[in-house]
Length: 294
Image (tube, rainbow, N blue to C red; front, side, top):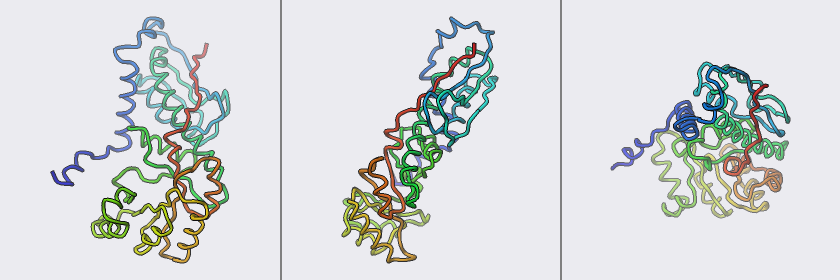
């Protein structure tokens, strides 16, 4: 099977296709053959209202998909958003109000809260990193370390928190990492092979872990260089070395050993970007709750 034929098996869905499928999968997983607790305790004709409230300070994300969950369960529900993605919410602040059939509201409750809590947690952690590097000129970006199936939503949550996205997948940017370099026979051969075949003009980034490897990369400068697990002194030296290239200077991305205790010092070295896998793989869910109005 050719490379093109293999690639055709994995055509990326659109954002709306991916999110719609994820919502339906989550509801099928939770509701299964029926929400018997709700069906057996709530009369079919009962209607009412409920609110989703924040239970802790947070940066909000995922309001649209939360609304979609309720409408997937019952298109007749009225779902009004009282906040916007990227805004800050305080404890007891109402984020969403839902009106309509109580059975529908309660059946959708947990899935809706799972989306809103998870995505707001990512946005909240991202905001903490963005605030930590404020004034340095460095941008906080995410990685591909996302929950399978959630990539569009998790990357949207990073943006809601003030961060930026690295790449959506393997298809929209070239990132030559250590294993590619080892298999291709070195940084130079890997970069040359990409340049010979990159007819689509995709942005090209190469990973280096030493200043010597940086020199190899700069022989045919890519668009971006990933400085992996370098010391602060090495990061400063890399910035000084590439600054001399003027217009040909690749953007520098720092990665590895990044946490809220180290990120400001990393940013102060002068790098352009700091990638943080923890934004999507380690963010705790924000605490949100649905309350039926009595």
